[in-house]
Image 1 (cartoon, rainbow, N blue to C red):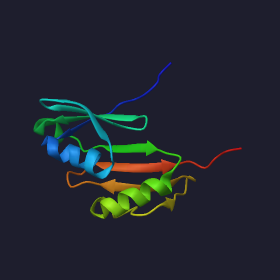
Image 2: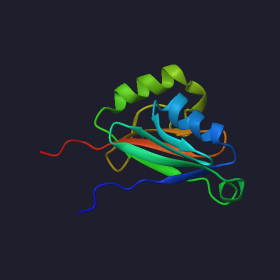
Image 3: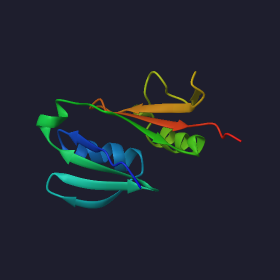
Length: 120
């Protein structure tokens, strides 16, 4: 059984990654040493890694599925409106049926929040 996929996201400086995940998204630092931090919130986790070499090679798009998109949107938009993605800055119903909004941090990391409709 696969339980969880945990992304590793590279940043030039650890502070950039912690700004996005902790200051903006409300994750908690579960472990930190040297160039690695493990952050978590609810059931989600991510590895934040300081590596200028790898950060220059890839700026990922991370999707987080939720069942409380409006609550998360209110929290993030009140705390950090500066990171709302210009293409999807508010909760929007997408052509594929999901509600979504997105964030884009100053390093180019994109985080998409997605809530699928309840199927009966």
